Amino acid sequence: MRLFVATELDEPFRERLVELQDALRRVEPDISYTRPENLHLTLKFIGDFEEAKAPELCNSLNEVLKVGEFNMKLTGLDFLPETGLIRIIGASVDGGGKLQVLQRMIEVTCARFGVPIENRGYRPHITLARARRPLPRSAKSRFLSSASVTPVESLVESFVLMQSKLSNKGSEYTPLHHVDL
View 1 (tube, rainbow, N blue to C red):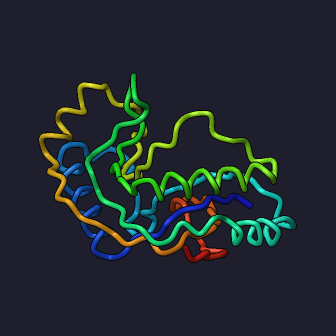
View 2 (spheres, helix red, strand yellow):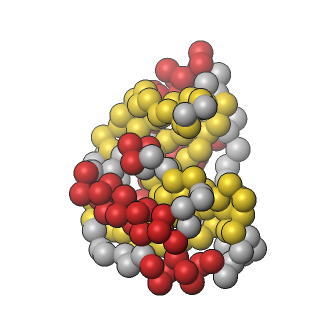
View 3 (cartoon, rainbow, N blue to C red):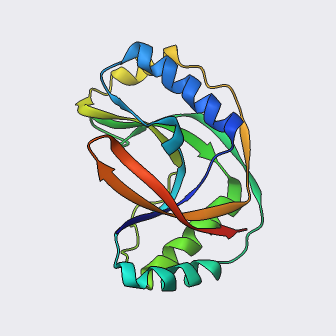
């Protein structure tokens, strides 16, 4: 099974992201936009995971340090990777120190199950679109001039272990386990 850990988004935050996607779509309609119901903040991509070990992973995630709820703010657009051709357009978010601590604790918990620790620093973003063919870095200015980022906040009270199933209609996400903060 293919898994990841994420925070879900409340409706006002999701609506603001969809507005951003609409503005980006007017600039570049030929990239793959994340379906609104699939918008989330990834805390840890696990990838393929042995189904028999999933209950043990859920129990371990229950033990992650309870950082308490926190506000997550939309702060702008992000273009990944950091240099070279653009493959992903995301919404950058800030959850302060609590988000950073939570992500690190989840990273360490997953490592106990053989999931490699990410060697890059955590860069919190919500994927809005993926370029089927990478875009030149110069496209960044077109996106920034067409999509104004209106601030919005979301209260993060939990995180979720999600299963991702790939199909010809795109990814389908199923929540497997919620953990309150």
